[in-house]
Every structure is written in C-alpha cells, then in structure tokens.
Image (cartoon, rainbow, N blue to C red; front, top):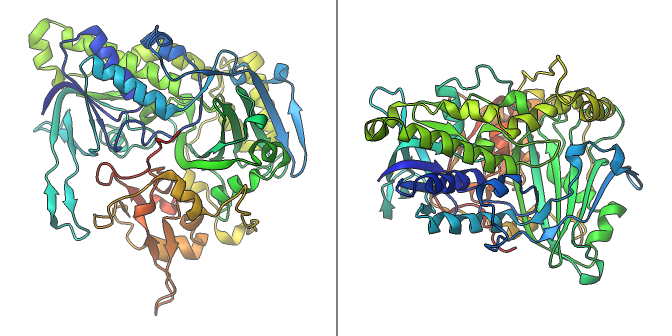
Length: 553
C-alpha cells in the first residue's frame, strides 16, 4: 500500500500529524496505523489535559463536541506521612503544577474523537495491525515505510489455518508515534545513532485505576497530587515518584501512582506500593463506597529536555513520547505530543511541496530536518527547558529535589549554566539483593486494594494464546534471568511487572530457577524492556488487536 505519509501509532501525536497534513493539503494520501483493536484501546484513561496543543490544531473543538467537559476547579498538593499529611500552599508550588484552565478527561475518548476528525478529512485509519518491521531502501540508508506482523502464526512459528501475511505500507515519509519505548522507534535510534548527543533516557511506571463513586462524595474538577509516603521514607530518600487523584464527571475518580524506574531496591513492587497508598486517609475518603472499573499501566519518559534524541532521519521522524516530550514536573505529555505532531506535519508538508512533484516523488530520499529546528523554537522546548534539571535533582534525595525544583521554578527557569546529566540506564541502578532490605506489603482487603490478577481482569487485556511470545530474550542474553537476575537481584521481574507476566520456576538439577513468561497478560507497558537487569528482556509487538482494551470509561 502506497501513501505520501504513514504515522505509526494512533495516539495524540500520530493523529495530530495526520490531521494537520490533511489541513495543509487535502490531496495528500495519509495513513494512521494503530496496533490496538480500535483507536483509544491502548490509551489509558485519566488525564489532566492542557488544551494548548488542541487549541492550535482544532480551534473550534468545543463547537465540534470534543469530550472535554470537566474543568479543574480545585488543586491540592499534599506531602504524606504514613497516617497524616501536610498540604503545600498553591502559592509555593511551581507554576507548572498549577492547573487553572485545564480539564480532567478520558484520553482514550479524546483519541477516538481525534480519529473521527482525521477520517472526516480523508485520513486512512487502520486499526488492529501492529507494525513490526521498518522497511529500508535497497541501500539501507533511508526509511521507506513499515510492515505489519504476520497473523495466524502458532508458537512454533508455523502458519495456522487463519494465517495472513503482513502488509507493507510504503510512504515518502514515515512518522513514528508509538509512545514511550516504542520498539521500532528504539531500533531507529540505534540504527541512525539518534541518541549520540542526548542523555540516557530515564523512565517511570504509571499505574492507574478508574473508580465509580457515590455522587454525594464526588467533587467534579478536584485534582490532588502527593509526594512522600509510601515511596519516600525520609528527606534524603532517592526513590522518585508520587500520586495523582482526579474527579471527573459524571461520578468517576481517576487514581494513579508513578514510580521512577531508577529505583534502587530490587524488592520494591510498584503495584503493591500503589495498592497500599490507597489506604491513606487522604486517598481512602475519595474511594470508599465506590468500585473500580478499569486498571492499567504504562511506562513514561521522564528524562525531559536533555534526553530528547535527534528527531529526524532519512525518510521519517519521531513524534510525541517516542521522542520523549513528556513534562515530568507537570505530569503531562498530551499537549506536547499534539504540538510535535503538528510541527512534524508542517515540516513534512514543506518537504513534499518543495519544487513540486519532482521533489515529492523523491521525498523518501530526504530528511525533514526543519522539524528539529521548528521544535527547538517551539513552546514545547521552552517548557521542557525550564524544568530541565528538576528530575536530576531528585537523584540526591527528596528534600534536595524539592528545594532545587522550587529554585528552578521561581528563579532560574532553565537559565542555569549547569546540567544534571544522566548517563546510567534505569536497569543499571538496581542494587543486588544482598544490599537491599526486603519490603513487607500488607495483603489487599478486596475493597480498596486488590490482588494483581483480580485487577488485571479490569484492563480487558488479552492475546491469542497460540502465537509467538512477544516477550523475548535480548540478543546474547538467553538464560540471563535464571543465571544472573534471580541469584543476584532476587528476580525483580516478578515484582516490577504490573501484569504478573513474569515468574520463576522451581530449581532444576543444577540449582537454577528459570524465568517463566505468561505473555497473554501483558499490558504493553514496556517496563520489562526498561528495568530487567542487563536489559535481558526484549519487548516486541504481538499480533495486532491484542493487549488492553481501555474503552469503558
């Protein structure tokens, strides 16, 4: 299938790019390829949304009925102890943490709405097909499209009666908007050395639940963020992370917990930290009497300004969280993703239009280098530069991180001449079990907190059982789990995975416990690809249509 432009991933950045391209030139052949069963099914609900990007993309979104209704009415930022709390006055919070003018939304609903706008403009939206391979020119110097994964293949790699060969989508420009830690995007960064001048990316794991609560305790527009318990045990604790809690109309409460994946203690279990956090009095009072209806998890880019790679390569570009435009201080990335898609579309359009049809026909030989320059001049880079050292300051501890963030937000605003660089990947910051204290977690009560498998049923996740496992050993790392990860780090895979995918077998005759994988439970969060010791696990796309279905709220 031949197109002018293909965007890989139907999230905010990919759809924004497709819409902007058709706004600029209705005659362009544009395709959005989404691995989820439908648009929004892999987009986790619960989001405080800044409309800045959407205001530029579709200025009349209100008139068109965008699913953006619950305006933020109240902000609260708390520091938690195990049983108490202290509210930080809003006047002392960094400006980027203020949510005046923002909305509490379901991002999956917004993505579906953007998909409808794209289709109205003539964009071809293809869902349920996973791009598994980048297509290169014969000489290997440029990207010319992507190929989708074969379907109907059994675990042995043999065709089943339902076998269908994957298809090639060829394009003059291919835009990669796969989200955080996209497998094709990561391969492109390595092939074209796009991270040569960037810091090593650091990540967080975000876990979310959506609750229905009684109307009498619902406070539409209320936003609460917390630091402290249970992640940080003292002022010098280096564990990065915190929580959020949003009240969205009609009677939903969106709760979430973010754990920086640069944590050191191999016994830390992000899911269980999330569950015990809900028992704090300042959280419990919002959820009592309600019921959870959705659960999910997703890795987040947290490296910010210094970790953004080179954005372009011959034949394509990186958009949104594939490039790492999330603002970890704001805990927001949808607005920057939309803006990056728009800017990429404008740069690609200019490239295709230059010198008329001759240049357009040869555009796959070209690189939309102006995209990089335009982004560096945009408010996205300005916003990220202001907080460029905040995350790095927390590597010294909670109190130094808070102090530096305040100094940066109110006075320095990114103008400091120094930089807190990150040169160590998250997996390498995990300490051996011999240097860590085991953590005893309370049992779930079945009312506020839940065992993992019970909660997993609320994600709608599922994969065809008889298909090749999409969680594989990285090249040269076969057996690393049993030989290194378990004996040295006590098998952290069985704790950091928010879907219970990984476990360890009983000891064999040689005393080794082998890593076991239940890939059908995978939430596509990519945490294993990031945090497994030695990066011994490689996440690749399964058959299209598999994974979570975040479509019920």
